[in-house]
Image 1 (cartoon, rainbow, N blue to C red):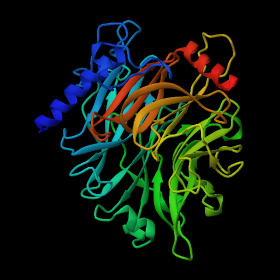
Image 2: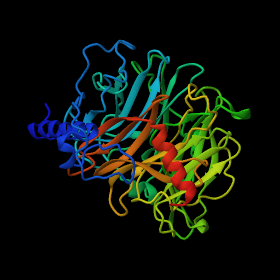
Image 3: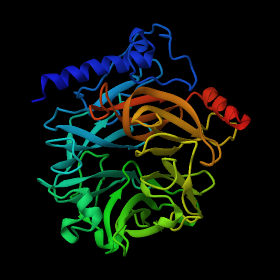
Image 4: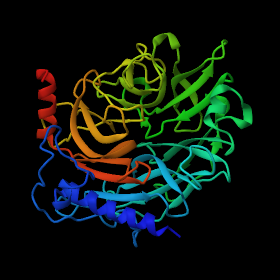
Length: 454
């Protein structure tokens, strides 16, 4: 049973989220989810519109397509995961994709369910909640992968548009082994990190058992290994069209005993049946310590890669590069990205799709989500780029509250979804979902300001 404190905290925070989104009276008093243009006045309460509130409860009817939000009735926020409930101490590490046909989409929100503590080590499962109304309400909690007292996590889902299959990559290790032990090489083999894949052919309602692919994607001299976390992509351009491309990271130990981080991709050209290793980047001489990585295919077919710089020599916390061959190699080493300032933490990128109704032919921008406070995991913001990730500008501040890991998904031509860790006192309290209108005028304004150098 969920604790009274957990339920009270979740209910209170949900009200603050809803009030902040709608600009209601609570918005000026608490830093809930607050989508608004960067630089907007944070002091006012905005128009007193009717707050629709959090709709994070279970749905009574979970049939795909039974209810869809529209402009007049769509919610703004929900809480699919609240720590201290559903038999889990903490929910962390969000990932989100949208599956199913365009007229009956199903939103899949994944997380790690940590049974006994917030620790990265221990009894950790991969769990899922599904939504058939665009993230306003959520079906029951589903257990997607469970390895008993051990750890399975880093959910990295991808939807193949050709077949509708949802493929999920995860990693495992014994529950009593720490990341530090694995990274240092103190444990290896079956006691180290292993890589698995599973799939669903019914929009996440049921899942195959995890299948191990470690031997195909992890060299013997690597120690730590993590897929994503966050969504992967299916490429749509060139010779690699149809490729499932997954961002990942690893560690290795140099002859002098020093431990180094690196980034890589894994990919499948047959719908997820077989997997291979793509690019590998882990030269410490570059001064970048590539860690958790996110990627997107740009409209011109290039792949943009953006990584957490864990302990690199650069003062920047993020680094990026491009691939010109579908993720098999990188065109240049990762370099610091100073315009994505923030703490050392995971982030997410998403290439928006242009609205066919627009008719302008203009390319849609690239989005980045992540905390933007300089030295703390708080102030979740969306940044936008009109030049494939070369330059960035802040577009929306989602919340000033504590915030951590996140993932982005495009719900329709006019709406983007953000699944992210947040809370009143800690980013580990909840995983919230925000529906954010893609205000083209605001996006254009952000790009114009960037171009003007303001």
